[in-house]
Length: 272
Length: 338
Image 1: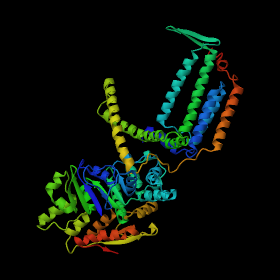
Image 2 (image 1 turned 180 degrees about the horizontal axis):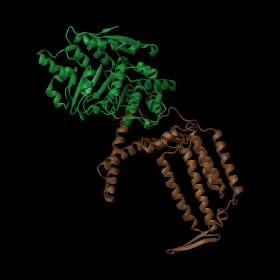
Image 3 (image 1 turned 90 degrees about the vertical axis):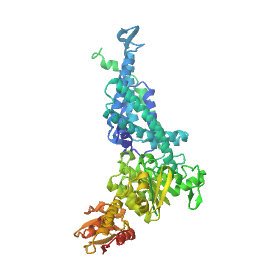
Image 4 (image 1 turned 30 degrees about the horizontal axis):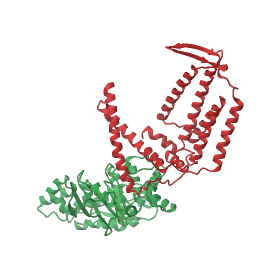
């Protein structure tokens, strides 16, 4: 099984699999919004706790290696972004300044605090999104999208792309190994050429696959709609109320705790 | 009628199949179903495809859903069948292909052989009148090929018309009552297999070879200066034909399976099992079995070698089993069935 398909497998083994996908989506979106609304640095920690709890309950923190690498990459980007924010100060006390080419660089206490806030928000947001992703396979998400009356054509396209995306990735993996067996990656230029050839091959394969898929779908009486046999639960009022309640509580907590934790004060004497 | 369409790669087998359920419309001529020409309206095609199911060669082209049960339910749900009935069909069809315990598994986690079985279960769940299998054994190991063909036999016995396409001449020769040979999009032969395979030139021009059993029979009878007919299609039939009148023939102890599998007598000789219910029971009880697949042939070969054997089979397959063994009488002695 390719690593790309492991996320899907994980979602199907989740304890939260048959929870209302739209309810889960609503909950996650509202938590993410609450995560962004206030300036309190404590709110991202609550968001992180929610995300980690979801991941723990859903799949005991099981994350496919491929996804873990992607998360680490996202974390690295967040850290770089937070670093850039920290040296883009415009107000507050200047903690450190420098010049790079024609650019003046200032790290202020405001920008320092902002950078930490952004980093925490980002990490917390990732945890919540992972909690959702590890518990909701795409067919369930598509069911949720149908419930919010997204055009059926778009929903069906999502399902088809999802299904055939994996097959194309598997084929690409086979082509990659076949090319490697024939020394297709010896040298930088040859690697680029081989990668381009694989890309072309995959594109042609995708058209062939689409053609065959259309035939196979017709053979099974496809009527423009992928029916779900075991549909997840529908979103009820309790989901809406619960999500709204959590969101409101987080916002109130955030408003009450704004400025309580100051990262500059915490690091004062250590870094500055 | 067990019908096989044979032809080399590119002969047009799959293209012809897609005419059978209206995916393709013929440029010339007319396709008939149940004596009536096909109509190509949306409703008529939908109705036709409920009756004529195709299992394509590559299961990845046919499996769309994320889990096994969702995929098996795909066809029945498209037919707007009641949920209880869909559930019954899922269970029945997955049981038949031996995949019931995998019903909640993601399809991406299955092996190729398992995906092939799920694809077959998806077609069976539609309970078609005509089941078309495009290269059903391609890519399967020999045991799984045997299992698929035994399942196909059960379907035939249950009244489903099965049409198979293959370029495996041994499979076609052993199984088919009627073959249709395609060459470069043209039908060049229709009828029983023997006259076609006797025509060396036509076989070669069609990009095929003669079946193994057919060739051995021809060679032996040519050496013995005797007529090739009757033509044996299996090794046991060939042995029956070649055995001497005073040869000792073993006994096949017949046990129809309608009770606990633990009651199989642990007698001397090999034990063979036949039928999906028996196979499942044996799997669960972990009883010793020597011929897990192709058991009728295994027991017949034992009998031809003078050995006794036990054959346990689904009770509803009794006539099929007895008829298959009795065919040996056309070639020589029939083993005693007790």
